Length: 186
Image 1 (cartoon, rainbow, N blue to C red):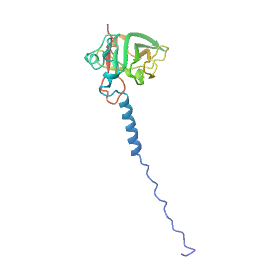
Image 2: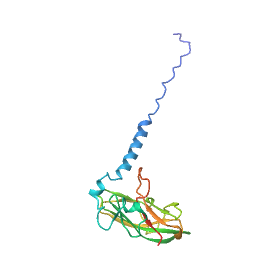
Image 3: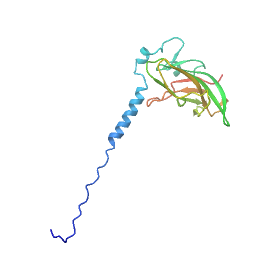
Image 4: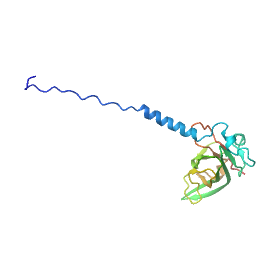
């Protein structure tokens, strides 16, 4: 090699491309497993929950036949849910229609409660998601331990005379409709 010749340039090795597919696969698997763990295994609801207990309708039978009367408690996978009354509230300058709801966890696992599990539907079938209602009597979101109870208001930015049905649906990848519904008209 001639000491006066310019040095030869060697390109650095190409950087390794990050492998994204394991991350994507892991996220999808965690999402699917998380949604599956929120649902009881087939046949488990009958043995571990009081779905046949007197006084409670089961979501698989009564909830599917049409809207229930206010005050009718429904067993949805061991979570007893109920809409007891429809009231109106004002927050800021908005007049809201609110459903007074209650929860009782009769299962042997932690269940979740959240205003986003609820929707209002008008007589024409249009659905309305819950409104962010922040007063003292609002339903709080979070976990509900076995044996735990909670209640509160879930509100909608819909006039009272436009609410025909209140619907409850647990969040799930495989949920294709409400688990229970109550007639909001008298």
